[in-house]
Length: 298
Image (tube, rainbow, N blue to C red; front, side):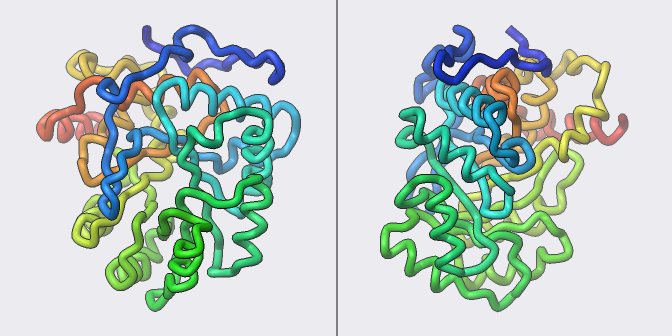
């Protein structure tokens, strides 16, 4: 069944029950997973971003967050990415963790703006956890940035992995320098079918230093959906993409240097649709070129 991008009807959190299409367990062999180079631990290749979508701490947002996280786990996903600067997103996630048993089934990542233990502790308190799976230094700007404090926190068990991020291309030179010199476990960058700067600059270096790659903004802040509005997925892509979301995400996942894509959504149906990108085959190199040319011509 092809899932549409329509509003998902919410249910009271206390009686949360997902439709059967979301609730079917997904076996390990039926989904695309990628290894974290520094350890070999495997992650499902589609996760969840929380910028904007979970930034208001109210009952409706907490309910939607619970539904989306339930859909993520039910569909075989694990990774949820947030940040100290995403307004109330950490608090919203913490509320869901406290009211469900989902925390232990998730790979939780957050970001801080500086190697500041007070900022990091505030994130842990908001999330209601003693540690996170991945801690990232957000929006790296200094080419001489040290990750020594992050390594100390990792050694203390406050995080299992460390990483760096940037979605500002003007700062990619600094990101490249820190990636090369500090060799973090992860790097997170913006990357989409119509925004491929990272493909030439960051992905080769990440592969060289054995850093896992998370791709933010894979839909270009929904820009791509506007580009294809009213158009069907082309017939030649139907056997690997059942929706435009899967078309855009599979383009990225066809690059094996990408560990996971992390599109944001507050809609459980959209989450289930996104997760479809880690099932079935990926486009081959020729198909990938055709996909990029198709989007560029729109």
